[in-house]
Length: 246
Length: 246
Image 1 (cartoon, rainbow over the protein chains, first blue to last red):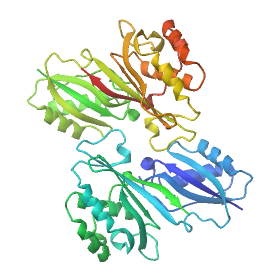
Image 2 (image 1 turned 135 degrees about the horizontal axis):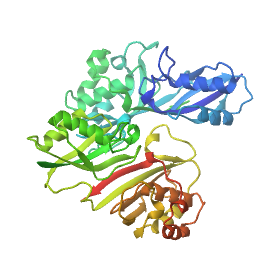
Image 3 (image 1 turned 30 degrees about the vertical axis):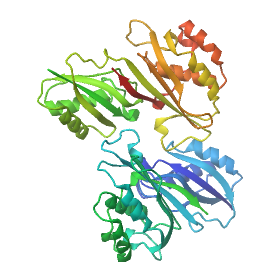
Image 4 (image 1 turned 60 degrees about the vertical axis):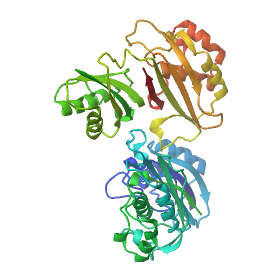
């Protein structure tokens, strides 16, 4: 058996998420189909985690194991010629037989894109959450400081995710753009994320940016561990999984 | 009768071009449908020119005339709420009754986006021409200098466009990006463009960038007025109409 690691870029617009479902087009499903074409074996692809329907990736990671004479380069080229154009394999490398794309994750980084201006965009509308009302980015920066560090993120978790506990460590939670730039980029790095955690945190930060709550309310929301205390889930199409570290 | 001017942004991906056709979804068709809903009159929309299937616009211009009590603001809001999300009205203003979106054009500016790197993109693939082989941007810059000024652009014109002659004046033809940046942006401004002219010029510049011809061959291609001497037509999806001046 040999183990291969993939780094995958995809446009989540036309996918029902990463993970194979009974119905709907999925990234995992498309890659497994292409691997079957190449190897004539059923090959299971394990991602670093699932991304939800509509979420994009610039650097999702995954592994698969199979008995093959094919080289990583052959998989790289073969998969890219077989896959639809909304999935691109950025790299394929051989890994030790114990490598596991989910269990071995050290940190993951997501970016969330907001376009904050009165006018909706036609170009690029599938890659950013358009918010027409003016956002106070300073309030969002202040609120974001409170989520850094090790906390129980139960208040920012949607149900339905298998996990032993909801404590995670966020090492980075910052905005990459200046005030007055209509494009707002939020970057968050943690050792793991709960279901909808980025979208729930971002949705709550936006509430502070819109003046519906204050940044100082963030610690109480965290302490409550109650999902109903946090803001609404931000839409999927602004979210990008950009990097997975091992 | 009142005359209104629209500035329109659209994602050309899912359109059969600007102009109403017997079949297929068009930008003009969608706007006229929305205007009929608002005014209960058949209203003809005249663009600054047609854009071909797949071409995008950040600043297409158009006018329409009708008898109405609706204000420009009412059209702006009403159209944006009625139109599909791949068309956005950026502004609606009242103009003098003689204003004509096509006849009164002084200059138009297009941008063409190329992504020059080995790996195809999944994100944003609908907004740039991906060229995997390395391009010599210096050669393209040199070649572009030759198209500036007033010339007969017959060599860069596809047949089927109604026009009295093929002489046009290009005031700007430049690259906005540095060498080594994988994103190459070409900007071109002229007092008018023939059918496929930008895509044919850009396609020819790319031939020089790939070393298939030299920049010094450009004047002879222009002089030939023969379409078969120029390079292949660049794909539609890298092209954006960015501004129309009156």
